[in-house]
Image (tube, rainbow, N blue to C red; front, side):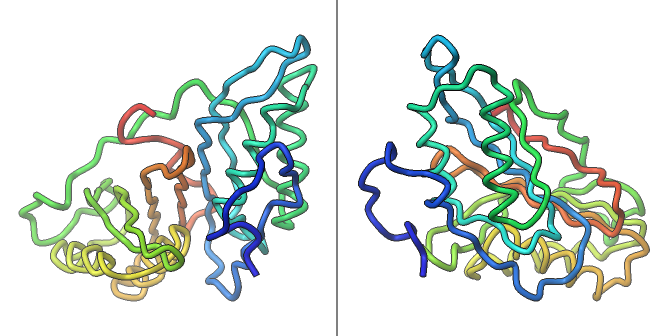
Length: 239
């Protein structure tokens, strides 16, 4: 049973790691990848009890047994506003420790002041070519899906690169098919990877969803046939 999803939050100051709600990834396909979580409103007290506001990047590996429910993560992170740390690293260590325990994996966390550079890409929406070219970067603008819990729409740009030739019309129709479909960000990208791989038998494939933020947090899953990921933590516009 969800701890906080769909429920009224009584007090952020009373929240703790016990507020975190795990989501079992289940029998998902074993794909290389990572979920980048960007929290834009992470604040805590420094050694002088002065509030500090940071942008926090969290990396959860795709092979983790669990991921975290986004509202519970927001409540957990918001509870730091009254916590004091002598060093920034102490706050990061606390986040990593709690999320490692929850996800049963090695989570990475750091503060960032800027994102990686967005890759140059070819817009599928306006592309007239029948097929893509191998090892080029393509993007689908204005992806829409439905949250399976809240029934609210989520929006993203989808980036992909493959060593194989892909049919442009098929890709566009496929991405549009999610507009009325309910699924979590991570599951959407995993399904994309598996379906495109099965359709075209790709020699190599990497897909990344750059989702718009909700409640001060955005979630950006990347799935790949390679252990070395091409897509970093970038945004299609600055913060």
